[in-house]
Length: 284
Image 1: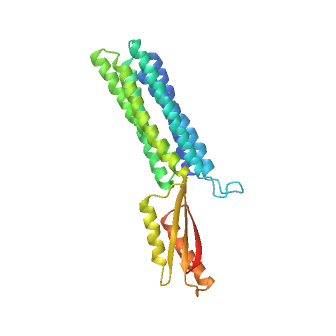
Image 2 (image 1 turned 90 degrees about the vertical axis):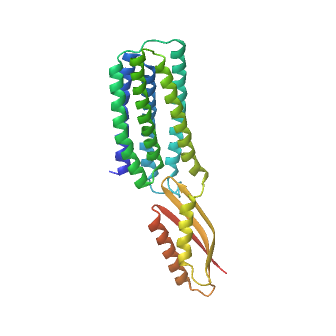
Image 3 (image 1 turned 120 degrees about the vertical axis):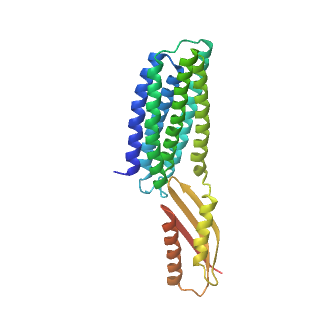
């Protein structure tokens, strides 16, 4: 089984278990911060499902309707995940404000604290695994899912600290305040994720360092009476696309020109995985 699909399934399983635990303890305790964490985990579950299906679709080979492949499905899923997180954050703020206006005691603090610590530990493990596979496969969908869980680690610890403060001070108002802080952190996460996922949909160029490296590879194959221009790059999911114009000596044979193009293409593909290279050959 594809490693991207395996780790996406792990994320779905972990989020499902944590949702059940947080909802049970949140209802028993009456803590809006724990309920906010349950909502956060539910959005993480939706994000994990989106990531799971997007990585399956994005790896589908190119076809007649999608001659450039399906890589951008991962970027679309990233945008969808960001919007889900955005909605969740405002839901949490709404519930927290209601709790500030009509405060109520928080009970079973020990259970809540234990669940938050367990959630943080589980999400540390799963997010690290997701990040590792995301970097290995250059998957924006898995990286987005990992970002969700990484943020969930911070928010879970924040809620746990808040429950301790309630226990020490006896003031339930701490609970909705912690929930609002959690929501603000989630809003920041959604903005970062949206920016990262949306950019490739506009066919932005690869990072300057990558473009410089590609230029260096091409320069390395340019001998006397050779040059190149109009280098363009873009990315779709974990697939990269490079095209440029290569100026050759008019006296060069087609066989020789083809060999040079093959060498350039192979060297670029060795340096950057999942890359398509298009070279337009021209004469001076």
